[in-house]
Length: 472
Ligand code: ADP
Ligand code: GLC
Image 1 (cartoon, rainbow, N blue to C red):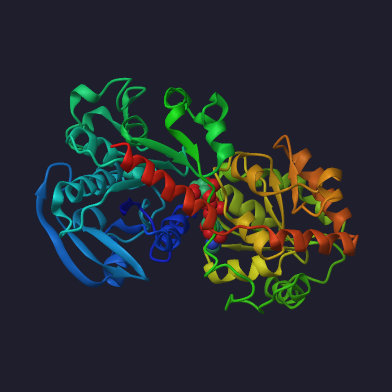
Image 2 (cartoon, rainbow, N blue to C red):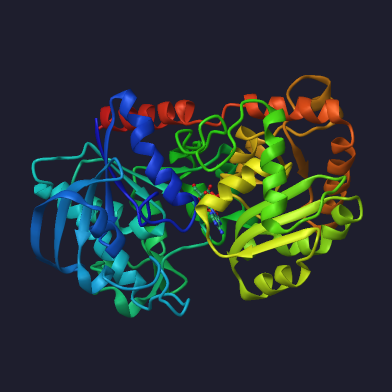
């Protein structure tokens, strides 16, 4: 089974969030199941620089792409196809934002080109490598199912929603530039309130849709979470499934992590906690050291934490936060820094490992969360997750309710509704549990034993690919 995975980021080469982790881990998780996955990525400078043994499999000019080459090669242990198109990707800044922090105005064209490249590979230009399935991630790959379907190909396509908040909108004036037929600019097609939506194109034209947790799959079909696309998803309910993300246990495992003082039992966390306090300039404390590693955006609900924080600090708890994003949130957290609150604004992969290892608890108060990975790291490292009862967070944390505590299953705390008050109550409960060392270490052991790897979910993807290929 050969699968072309189409993604706009892929760890460890280029990452802004969990999509990169998933795109980077899937090929390795699927290989033992007989799935050969190659990943099609934009030729950002970092990707081109890392590429080894690059061979051009296609060079030319195509409508909706412009001039470019598709290179086949390897980087960071991954088999890649890379769209080398300097006019789109050879730029300073991040994958989506310029150095000034705003979206590149031609993002619709840039990622339409990536989707076009997927179509070109399916057309037989993959250097002799022909995918049986094309698996597209988020809006940046949303036009690939469209191009593949409209070209009359029979290769099945899967569209995975990692985050429906990003819909790939472009003005109708860009239809030709994006190589979309005017006849498809309808409500049943790619039109979304007068604009083109690349995500909607994927949702309408892919053979199967997935998202990254069963809970979020259900939520997506409701107006509260569907962000205007819930109707489209309800219409395709039979083709939508939720497959939970795993974490890459070759990167995230306290027993082998080279960034930390390694441990196999909760007791081994103590030196990491001491080191983390020192690193953030925090004093010793009687309460739990809570950590946050997150993009600072509306989605993540960290404004609620600003309000709820006194409940933690008043009980001897502490906070160490690593994140970047919304300037208002950056300033608000920075202003709180002191002996009980440590703040690092920025992106730091190594520090994130030390925080997950050293924290007693990890806070994820998201308003919506398709899956979430940091609570899974928390479980694996015995760092108890305190999460909002939503999406993948609800699916992955077993709450320390009386029922959860009665049996050896509880792994963390959940709160609902997603308000500052409910979060504050959860933080108070956290401090109460922390004050009962036997119970606390039982929770930590439950958390560390909870399966968070890719095995089960990789098998679900493999079964889905099989089913789609067979039904053709
Ligand atoms: P999302 O994709 O919505 O940002 P996830 O929880 O799925 O949320 O994935 C976020 C990923 O990005 C995790 O691997 C997390 O550790 C990482 N991350 C987020 N912010 C930072 C940061 N400031 N520094 C280091 N890693 C970060
Ligand atoms: C998105 C979601 C996050 C998910 C990640 C990987 O960025 O916000 O919940 O874990 O994609 O699927």
